[in-house]
Image (cartoon, rainbow, N blue to C red; front, side):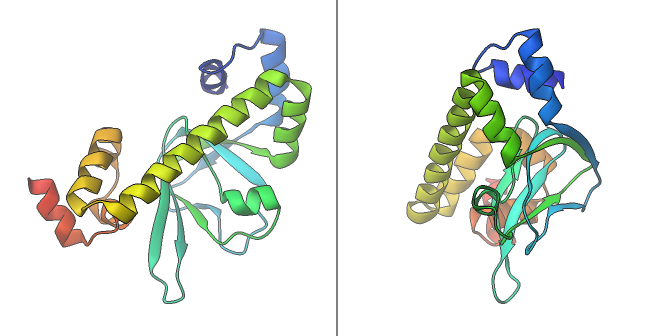
Length: 187
């Protein structure tokens, strides 16, 4: 739970009493490699805060082709957000890529914490805003950059992920073939 507290305090300080209350809204879960936290069609009840491990958020098209929307590592939040916030069924998957641990919480908990503490409302707003900005940048890169530029940006932003994620998944995330990624990687 200390990792969660440090994460929150990067945005807003919380007292010991406040954090004792905040942590009651989160539950620890150990996750095995290849385990799904969200499966297409699931009722999405939880948002996850990553304590350890690497996760991928993805969807499958009608032909079964996988499209990776997000990787999540330590101190990142993840779920199928459309399903989580709209309280409907998932159209994405969240899969663990290496053994790890997450804290999970419900939408009710998020709303209750935000109502009880302006600090937490501020925290969640900043996290959502930062996530939205990052998503816009990702879409912009996918729409208007070369594979080389996408690769360079990914390796600059996430050098640790380059070492932890199989190249085939990085290629998927960047929207290039495995062969193209190999050529970019060798440069």
